[in-house]
Image (cartoon, rainbow, N blue to C red; front, side, top):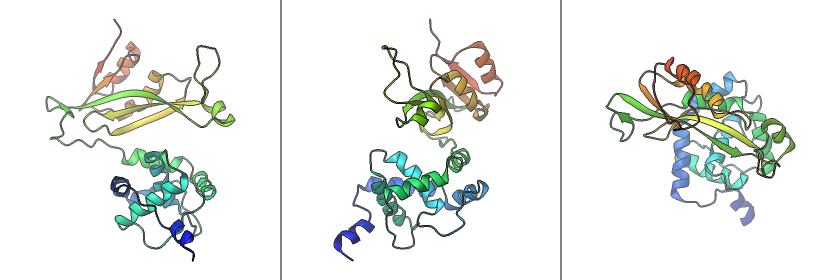
Length: 245
């Protein structure tokens, strides 16, 4: 084996924080939990592959952490991180970008959605600073954000483009995301997404099922309406809305 071939099989040296972050992924999203989700969604491979479904799940999560890196480089970082937590058993060659892309397509979105729904939960303990009000209510917040997605015909049809002053669409199609987050830890415990044409308030209705009577939920300007307020009240949670003058 040449020196170049040997280097291609090894993860590149990175910052210690890279490997610590990836180690946390493997500990939060336990292997048994990932395997359960893959089994329930019928996503587990029927034959041995270079990129088994469990590894691809961890890889997609890592792509979100290292979104500025090339496909292969993210995989190198991930393999190095998983080795540190004994989640990797043998020498392994980093696949090509094309093979990684095909593996993502095989996996699909449903396993990641179910994994998030089962693993995402408030993280604050009674001693977490900024997480509680009067030692009674867990402080939560609902807010929205728009994210650019690749400029393809399929994405434009599915998600749409934001409007602009010139009357033309924005540079990229966009997806709207609304999430329920824990103020003390910034942990997102529920989220949903929709095309850019769907309003934040309409999308926020989809995360109300995760509210409970122990929460005080903060809503930014634009969410308040009497109908939405009554929907929040029905969850048992307390609510604080920012409204216009």
